[in-house]
Amino acid sequence: MRILIVDDERQLALSLKDYFEPDGIEAEIALDGLSGRQKLEEESYDALVSDLRMPGIDGMELLRWVKEEGPDIPVIVMSAHGEIKDAVEAMKIGAYDYLVKPFDPDELLIRIKKAVENRRLTMSFRAGMRETRKAGEMIGESTKMKDIVRMLSKAAPSAATILLTGESGTGKEVAARLIHNMSGREGPFLPINMGAFPEHLLESELFGYEKGAFTGADTRKQGLFESAQGGTLFLDEIAELPLHLQVKLLRVLQERKVQRLGSLKGTPIDVRVLAATNRDLEKEVQAGRFREDLYYRVNVIRVRLPALRERREDIPLLAGAFLTRFSSDMGRKIEGLSREAIEVLMKHDFPGNVRELENAIERACILTDSDLLQPRDFDFIAPRIASEPAASEPAKAGKGESDGQDGTLEAMEKRAIIECLRRNGNHREKTAAELGITRRTLLNKIRDYNLDVTEKR
Image (tube, rainbow, N blue to C red):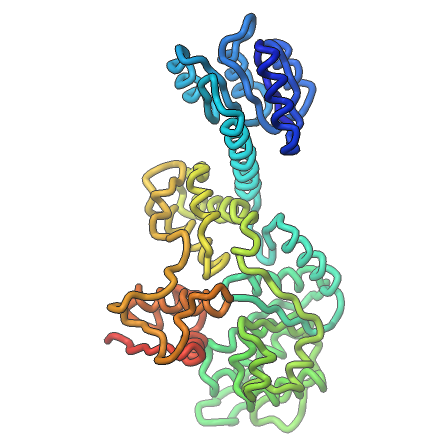
């Protein structure tokens, strides 16, 4: 970190420079406003610390120049006891903070670090405001997301089946679209959520049927495997696929042919298959709910998408992209988020991940009365999920079960489901919609976590 200290008190400036050095802060010194401005024009700094009273160009004039023409960096002003009014005026002009002399160097150090971090968040947010959320675009500057995009770009041109894992809302379908877009395949990208269809409809959706194959089959229907010819079929929530359909899927993947219901012959297909799940497929195999041979067939390349809490540095960027989209769609002129609002988002665990952040920004855009989103616009989000429901809450952990206060992903998911059920009066459709999962997936999780739930009618 590089900062510029502008003060005509040479000894104070030198002592601050020496004090900051052990913390890895490189401090340059200017003894008047004019030389300070020259340094700002010639060099790059992360922050400016300036005295208010100096001969020639004083701190107030230097501050005005920085805000109007100079670099976009935070400014912390130093003032004497009799200059409080001037310090307040400096804050109105745009100073980040001020300190009254004499002060503890530690206090200045803390404020410098906070100012630089807030600038980084603001710049990241602005970058997100400039991003367009095109289909298949993955937003993120974190090392984890860059590594994932790099891995996907290597795997995309191949025909290998890719298994995308991660919690609900982490962007598995977005990743699948990105793979398709980078694959060079000219056919369509067709997604299907396995948990969104009853078993009898899921089979006909995937494989199609011939006329007269069953009661009501008045015409022949092409399934998704045939419709995706030359393209990509994305099988979301593959763990929800019933066992008897897992056998049919395995045969299609092995033979590269699909057989419609009521047909005796197979149709050759050229389809790239991508699969996704928020469940542990290895545990599903051990429990007998997922075929081991199909598991190895879909798990050729495995990519885990991190939870949003594991890449918090991407939150400002994502928030900016969502705000741009929603404010445009709503015809509203919302300039951005305040530093404090970004800090609120950064502290939240987001059990619903990117989807929850997207919903939070959309709700804030709808309800805000301001052109700059403030912490009050996010008062519906708590800094963390409550560790357990109160005794009066309708959703309770099953008898003998852990209340989920440990820090595992399963415990966090369990707490999120309990809290969401409580908010929705145990209404499963509403709870599933808020969590961004299907009703069947929610029922499976209620069963897995042994939750005692009686739905209100």
